[in-house]
Length: 201
Image (cartoon, rainbow, N blue to C red; front, side, top):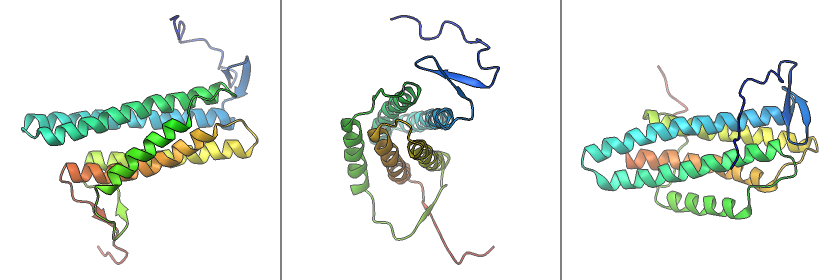
């Protein structure tokens, strides 16, 4: 395999444009470039989440709680898989007409989402982000997933080429990370914070 990046500083973007496949240059504020940036932001945030998750795994391994550590390690593996899928979406956006996300990717995520949700108690009230750093981080990932989905739909609304399965995947991701925040709270014995409409200081 050849080198993906042989030169970092190219100065080609100094005029306010960015190149994509096909020798095409777009303004840096173009919706396609903005969406690429949002997917990159989501992927980077997920990387931070994985780092926090790794710390939790080490904590439970050090405290002789192998079952919790094993379950969290499974989640860590899934999140790493999702990182690669997000990079594929970025690739699609950089190479219009190339579809890297397939129906099978969406199906696998739906199966995982359903299995995790089946293991949770029914929700009686809305949940606020928080409880622990990792749970709050997971809610943040969920929110940025929604942001990325909105950007992708905005791009499609301008008759730009967008893979339908990438749209579906991002929609499922926000649901997945909501369920994941609750699952991690359960595994780490973190109390969930429920919305109280009548709360007072």
